[in-house]
Amino acid sequence: MNLEFDVVELGPADHPEIGEKAPDFTRPLVNDEFWEDASLSELTDAGPVVLVFHTMDGDFPATYIWQEIRDRGWEEYDAEIVGLSVSSPYEHSRFLEEWDMEAFRLFSDPQNGVAERYGISHDLDGMAGIEEPRPAVFVVDESRTIRNGWVATEWPEFPPYDDIEAAIEEL
Image 1 (cartoon, one colour):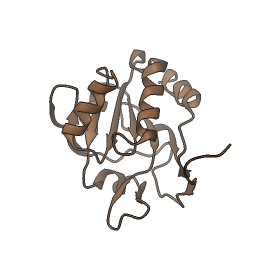
Image 2 (cartoon, rainbow, N blue to C red; image 1 turned 45 degrees about the horizontal axis):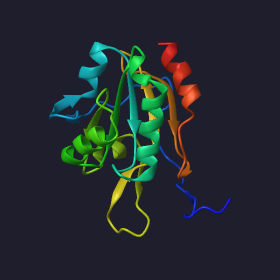
Image 3 (cartoon, rainbow, N blue to C red; image 1 turned 45 degrees about the vertical axis):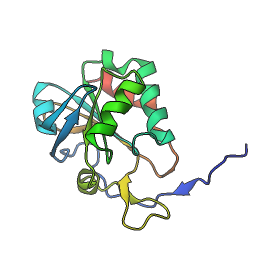
Image 4 (cartoon, helix red, strand yellow; image 1 turned 90 degrees about the vertical axis):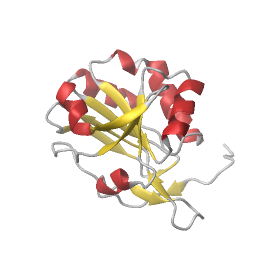
């Protein structure tokens, strides 16, 4: 198979592990119509959360990941599915509308501070000073304990959707 791009090793990550408490944060949480500041702890107070870190909106891995989540019907699970990337609230609103993903909300973290706290930040190749989160998924219960996690080790790499679904079903 001749790929039009190089596969890139992302190197080690220092991310939270299964059984550890997910770091809390507050950022703008965006739907297709508006946004407001929200924290992870506010979301977990209402129930389990699946936190999907993704590349910037419009990048093919982000589009592919969210289309797969949408097509698998993750919004039907008893957990809130939210994303997080460096994209602005405006970009998130357009992304959600364009790809018919009104069932989901996305955190906006343009300075990439949340990915840094989670130990999954990486430099964009060839762009000095520009970072974004590497793709990662954390299944977090009501006490903010990580019940399942996956972090990409190369770019592009996609989540093990079946394994994550099984973890969501166990909540």
